[in-house]
Length: 144
Image 1 (tube, helix red, strand yellow):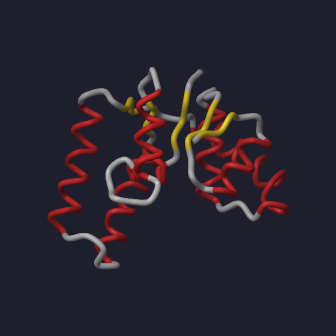
Image 2 (tube, helix red, strand yellow; image 1 turned 60 degrees about the vertical axis):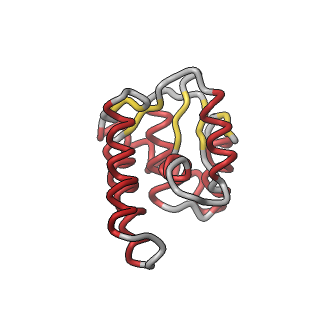
């Protein structure tokens, strides 16, 4: 089964967060390379910059984590993929109409679930509760 991880799950592999141990355990059980989209790369960098703005990390720490992520991509721990934009946006709009009125789903959550569906993933790796509920309703397995 193809797995797709949202950016929150991926960033927890690199930063000391309460979810880190669970993320590392889940990733250790995978027998595949995770897809990385331009959305992941933007969100990953922005998450680091937000932590810098909040004074939770230093510039040196941000740059070290960003370098480690790039090295992991180069070492093929992740695979850069493009999600066809028309299908991504169409799927995200359909998910919004179906789930946001009752679940309060955010746009980035919609885009991650839409990307997982468009890439024909069978499961989503996420810690976000609203995203988990929407992904389950959309037919994806969800871990951890």
